[in-house]
Image 1 (cartoon, rainbow, N blue to C red):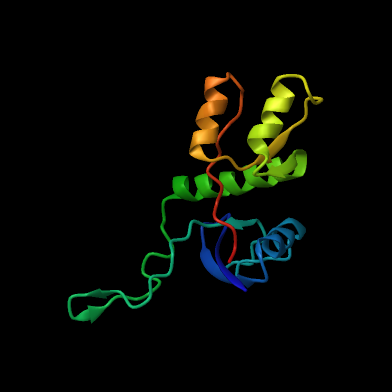
Image 2: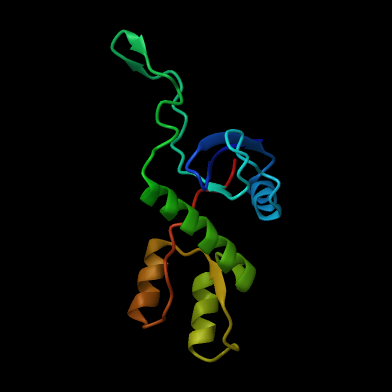
Length: 146
């Protein structure tokens, strides 16, 4: 199970427990996820900070969820946009894993038919692709669920 902070279109933030990110996405898309405050089903992922339980500030213990619900809408929009971008890329390209540099080269040099791909590359491999003039984008994916 994972915990996700959810924001409705009326800017209420609430916590939801989900099997995984896919389960969350399915519930949002189907309108099954409703705000417990106002009942709004127009919901999205809210920005979350890690739970740092056990933190202490002086003599007083700080709540482990003290930083869980930042109120900056621009940050929430950024995180939501990253999840949407990731979903779009995964649905519209082939995952090639750590073979990304090799596959990108094959496509670039005409050894394979052009197609959209995504995968992993080390910083060194990415630099080599840049030096060869191979067009690609580095995307800061949100961390996967544990």
